[in-house]
Structure formats: structure tokens, C-alpha cells
Length: 393
Image 1 (cartoon, rainbow, N blue to C red):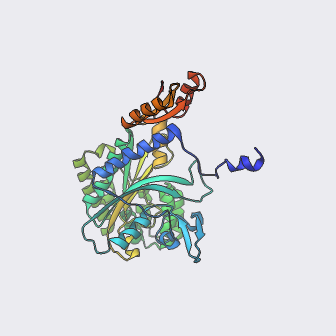
Image 2: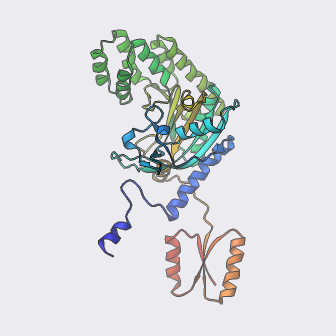
Image 3: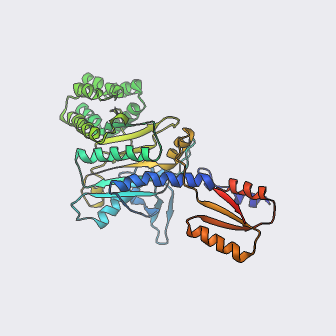
């Protein structure tokens, strides 16, 4: 094989091939996770792999323009490979369900694409699954979304994890009370998210923010843990917006107790997502042996109005590749059903075909091979290629 041939068999940086037992395992986890979404009555929706650039513009999307895969169609329109699903679902809901007044429940699965150099072990193409509840502004909707995520993760095989719940309006209320402009608020989010109190203090003092507001904002990074931190948050919330945010979290927690998922719940009011469209309750799911959240979600009550349909909404997404990686490292992957059968025959072909038909009718995924070498070679082939058994006839 010449140099060109060798180069052709490699994938670009940030993408990879998945096959055999590994892919079967990934598909099984997707199925198990999706089963729980369907149990809650969420209906599958498929949106295009690429959309117009404006669907993922800075005001709407979650990914900087420089990290989008952009290209042009024949008419000169700028198109984008989807970096995430939520704006696409919002566009679709606005197009087909403009007049709907009863809440809509959608779930989805597919690949997303982010063109970043800062991989840190992550892929540029990942598989995501998620759910969106559109048209319901209630605490019950927030609780349903979080409870469904917990149950779906458990159904996929994950046992030890936490869903950390925050409220972006708590932080925004404190920022508004302090009189921060948008640029300062965005810079402060970065410091608070990283729990960099020194950087936050330096920023706020440089903007001549009142001392009491600085003290309140600096306490945000320490507001994480059990339910009790919500009372601490109320003690420093000296504005209606922040108070209502904490009260909302308390309502959601009482509902989560009815679902029986409260052992998986913790709180973090320093969770101030960089995503522009989140407006209320937000949450991330974490498990050990992973460097970042395996699932993210929250309320985005003003996103759909950008597509012409004012409606509240909440949702979440799980990165299936990260979930598979976590389950593999924790040795907790559910065993996928394997009905792959290798039928090696030395008899006449007519008899072999009939036997293969019988096995296929019984639900076995049957491959026929004429015996041309020793049996051990076929057993080795079957083991390497995800066959559950080998039969010789």
C-alpha cells in the first residue's frame, strides 16, 4: 500500500470508527436509555443533520461560530452541521406546532459536530440523546425532566451518579441587584463556574460594585451540596428574582421526592451555564471516572420566541459516548443480547441454506460459511467479530 492508500484508511482528528462488540454495546445503551423516555410518553423526532447558520447563531446557539462546521449550498446560503439539538427542536416546534396549546413531548437521537482544537480527549462527532418538553412552565415539568433523566440513566445501567440542580435566575437576580452590565455578568459567570473567588472579587471591585453586592455574589460559589444550602441561599437573596428562584427549587425538590429520586439530587447555585438560552432551573449529571458532566439540561423559556412561537420549555441531553465510556470504566455495562450465529457447513449447500433459514426464522442473525480450514480458526473469527456461538454441520 502506497502513502496515499495508507492515508485514506485513517480518520480525521476527533472522529473514530466503532464496530463489533463495542458498537453493539453502544446501541444497547442507546436503546435502554431511550426506552425510559418512551415510557414517559415522549415521541421521537428527527431533524436535519445540517441547518441554516441562523438556527445556531450566537443569540440562539450554544457553540461559538468559529467552532461550527460551516459550508455553502448552491444558492450561497451558509449551512451548519448541527452542534446540538435544542435549537433544531425549537425551530421544528415553531414550524409544525405553532398553534399548539397542549404541551409537546419530543425525544431524539443522533450525532452532533463541533470543530474545536481543544479536544481534551473528547470527540468532534458525538452521539446525543435527549428530550424536550415544550409549552409547560410549571415546577412539575422541571421535576418530570430531572426524574426522567435519573430513571433513564439507571435503566442504562448507571448506578452511582448525582444530578446537580441549579437555578440561573438566582445568580441573575444578584447581578441585576448589583447593576452589572451584560459583559461583566458574562465574565463573572466564568469566574463563578470555576469557583475563582479571587478573580471574581477583582472583577467586581474594578467595576465599583457596592460592597454588599460583592459579598453576596462571592458567596454563590460556596452554595453547593444538600437541600440545606437552599436556606443559606435565601438568607443572602435580597431581591424578588433570587428569592423566587430558590422557592422554585424547593418546589421541584418536593416533587422529586414523590418520584423517589431524591437520593440522586444535590444542589449547586454556582452552576451558571454559559449557554445563552437557559432561563431557570438547570441541571448536570455527574458520575465518577469522567472529567465532565455526562448529561446537561434546564429550562429555556425564551428560545422558541426567536422562531416565532413564544412558549416555555425544558429539556436535557446526554452524550451517549460519555455514558458508554463511564459504564465501561465502571464495569457496569448491561450485557447486550447477542443472537449472532456463525454456521459453518461441510454438508451440501441446500441443506446448509435450509438450516440457516430455520435459525433466522427463530431470530438468530445467521452467517453461513463453507468449511475450508480448521474449526479453531472459525471459533477465533467468531470471538473477534461478536458472534455468540459457532455451529458446525
